Image (cartoon, rainbow, N blue to C red; front, side):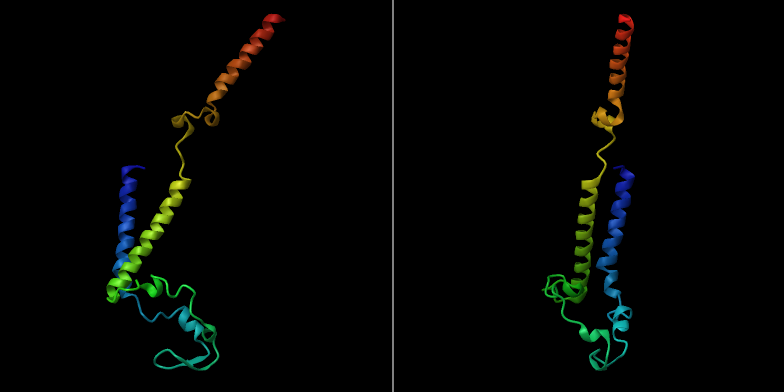
Length: 144
């Protein structure tokens, strides 16, 4: 990979780490998208507890991975919520980068065939085949 590509990749990773580690702490603790649409039709109190009505949020249950080390946008065992959320974001970015980078590494082009010495792919054997064919034609002409 060219040196300029490494700089671009490192810069993108740095920006992602900063966003995940610092800026994610300033995201709203009361998201309004999916949560509010699931509560339509229900009456909720000040603690966001459903007290009446009928809505899809009533069928919500605890997630199977709710007790995992990175559940609820934090790292279990770290009491400082700012540090816990930031570390969770940084770990998420690093794991995602590692999986994506590993996938690209596995699927990368191995270079063109001429640099590998693989003549079957780039037609390197074509000249040998033409030479053999030409020799056969020349030999056939001599005998006739």
